[in-house]
Structure formats: structure tokens, C-alpha cells
Length: 68
Image 1: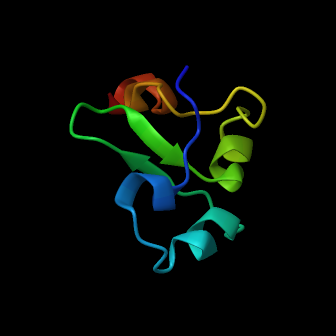
Image 2 (image 1 turned 90 degrees about the vertical axis):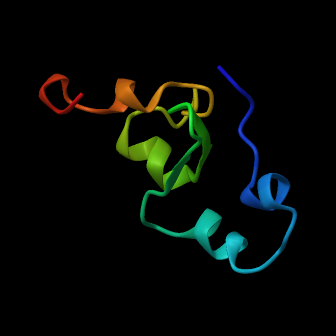
């Protein structure tokens, strides 16, 4: 699995990203290859991946089989 990075690291701008990282709602950012490049802690909790993280996983792993 990839290392969890903050959106600030990914986009290089403070902007409102710390608010997303601290949001109680799950937020996942996926790159053009379908790989998770950012997830906030709430997203990890939604997918029971708070300890292992979501970064580096294919987004298809998070979808029900019928939605892939």
C-alpha cells in the first residue's frame, strides 16, 4: 500500500485542504489510473481501513462487485 499523503503534499497549496482532511465526511481522491492518492481519516473508517489506509489501492476495491 502507498503512504498516506495530505492533499497539501499532492497539490502544493494550503487552500482549504486541511478542512477536508479534518472533515467528519469521508473524502477519497483518485488519480487518472484509478488509484487512491488521498483519503481522509473518515474515509478510512468508512471502509474499515483506518489502520491500513486506502492510498495505493485501486478504487475498484472499494466498490461493490455490481458497480465495477
